[in-house]
Image 1: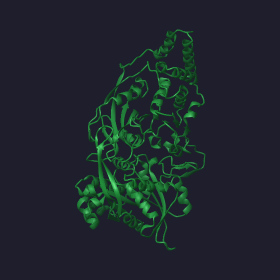
Image 2: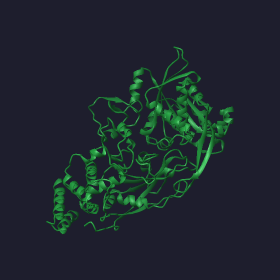
Image 3: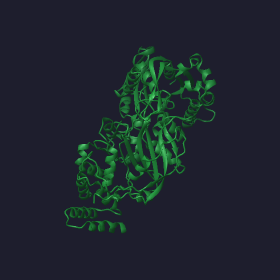
Image 4: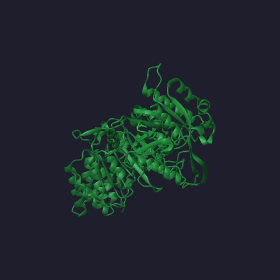
Length: 302
Length: 318
């Protein structure tokens, strides 16, 4: 509220609460004054008269959240695996369009900025199958920046929107860099451990109870370590053991999935403006594997 | 007067420093505080992370683009940051890597240094580059008072634009204003137009794209874009295009700002710096009008420059 009063928000005009942080906003506000979530989410979800489900896509910087979410939305809108998905609002299509356009141009999409008002949000109505009995889900999925997640984990309340989002999430997709983990790097394991520990602390169940929120651990860049596809659980147990142990102890509904979006990768080298050498990864073609399965599992558990 | 040049360095202050940028390390990658001097407190780190610019946050994509921000932290210290591009980000994913040097200054020292970001930004711009890899040690920075009283100014903006920006800053209401181009320098010169006493506790930025997360009072941008209009709509934040900035309603500073605008157009930026920085203590409409009238009289050679100096010095002494 302090931020809003500092920005001169009037107190007598009609207001609507934000879907994410519940901060009252003026009727003509486009984004929330507190958390910068699109206010159209409120109107769009209210119009459906159904309980919306927030699915958070989590993971450290450069793990591939934007690419994953972009392709997932694109597959949903192309009715892959019998899904039917309808984007609500043009803003929901921006992310998948950016990702598809970038990858078509053989480049990874631009880095997501830390500032929440520059995140892409997607609101989709989705259902599996086309029968009348198929249940519709109202899915709200923001593409958060990995750095913001890292900052919030390191110092809770740095980005309050992340706390609000996770508290309201019906499920989460935790993306982990399998290629790094397979190479023996401990960083993906530690980040995932911190993230799960944060969620555990946030939900605050009694000691003997486990967290029930379904979480799909997505092993990204699995094309670098094909053994992920053979046995994801064994891969996590062997290469992300800290994460595995925490999930076993504290989380009731966790599943592990191997995933890959890039079919083949080339590396371009050169010198940047400073004269420093650079290596630019060039995605030569996309070959989506395991993108839809985590989502499919997740909504079956919601 | 315009020929005088006084690069005063007798006043200086030791400021803590933090570097906010994207560097890969063993413990993480992406934008974060990669190095900081020992005096930076943990709550200040948290606030800096929230308020500093990340990828593609500068208005201009030109390699030499720069942006500045100035605001008070919850700890009470004043934060002055200089953001620039520093080559490509290691992931090579669109846009240049934004490198932000953040200086922390005690409020009293900030006043002694003219309550202006110029000295800090010049000090930050001259800092040696950090070694490769995160976790490099950085030390506190000695910031000396820089006051270029021989400056001629620039033709990038006219006096009316800068006076409009100064008027907006003086109002201290939440606003986004377009300066046309090089908005960081437009902010620097608009701040120079403000009496030194009016610059205290200001929250402003120049050259950075608008973001609510930064909690900046007045954001000076190159051009007004749809993203800014979308983010500010319904939140009581006024948006002004470059043309509107020139026509902002006058405040009680107007006699002085009109004077300063004329001097700017005449290439007498140094005179603006000299007179505005001498307007310390409590500034009110009567005093501002008196100074402006005296400046006019000196220009018309009806008064001696020494009388203006005496008027300003009297307030400094008081």
